[in-house]
Length: 275
Length: 300
Image (cartoon, rainbow over the protein chains, first blue to last red):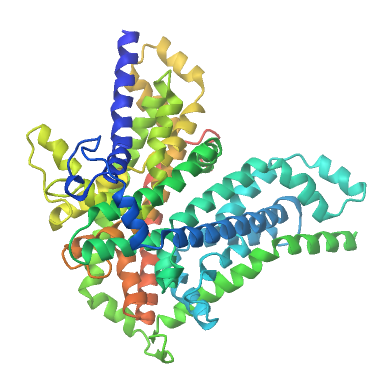
């Protein structure tokens, strides 16, 4: 009975795993097929070709898009991590009048839908002449982000205070305590923040749609959407190009996941348990 | 003593100053400005002209607003419960598996790493009415699949099914909650002769109900604002072949009004309506589901 149950569970899990992974494999294999075979359901291409990759490379400035995206994501992730950690430490370690009210305000901002601030924030960047540049995609992160501040504060709150007080008595200033003691202790939470924001910035489509005008400034998702508009809706469907570009867009995320798998899973698991 | 307190406060304010500045520039001011703009007619080029509540009146007469609200609401009502049930089922399966759990967890989580634009494109291909993979699969059972991406009646079900592909994060969250249920509860239930179903319904689900509640609220808020997948697949330059109206979500219509038609004032009014709708729905969800959520330390 137990054995049968185990086999059933394993079979069900395997079936689901196939359903979840199969689209990747299908997409990957289609990117190596000539146009006429893209939609056949064979996993191994009958005619194996690199033409799609060459064609995508010629049709779109992919290397440039990759560079833009990398620049934006690295700036966005480091900026938000450093400032969010600072703010989180400010809320976690110090006692000051109005602390709870300010933190409540911070939590309240998480509930405000992005749509409400979308237009006025665009107008701010517009009046600064920054529309059409990459700056609006990351510069806001210099001011921290409520969700990460919350996440990091939870972590800081879990640290014992004694070592920090001791260091203070020994004459260490607040900045040294934060950078030399607190930050290294909360490395897992810092890594989670970096990974989450890297993913968010890499996959974002709405902001690039709003702020980028010239295709030489595009990020990869924005470029992918442009390719779909051009080779899909624009007339004859060139699925092979769109699919191949999708594969190229997805690969960096998969690599990131395998590099940071442990932290990703842990970070996501702890996100929900605070509910 | 007073000076100590002053020094501490000053230090704290220095640490939190980035957020305070950011809040003033990127939240407080935009919220005020958005409220003002919603009372104006503004196209970015000319100065905003004050028109009172006209935008809000237009909003109730605009058939597209009703359509977008209905679409968004239907999508939310369909996708959120199904996502919850599927992710709970997968998490329960994973929790009772003994080997290769790491592999399965990775398999379920991977789609979450796919950029939403790519998910939108994948949707167009997997659900393609003529030769997509989904209809090919249904064909094995002799089922003639619908034209998911072109038939207005099937566009939302297609989007819902596609959204199931990315439940991986919820699975991981629920799994973490399942691991936290004390084993003693199951042991005593086993002694009482409770079967698997009974144990799941009477112990597991109540014990993880705070997590399920959290996911229910967060998923609903996200579904009400969904944009990228549907926009990628059904909107954009030169797209006239597809039945856009069935996929016109509220966030998409708002985006179009603001950045394609440059109706900044009207878009601001739309944003405030969305805010009110989300608050109202979340409030109702809190009131209705709160009773079913069990907290170990008693309800707060």
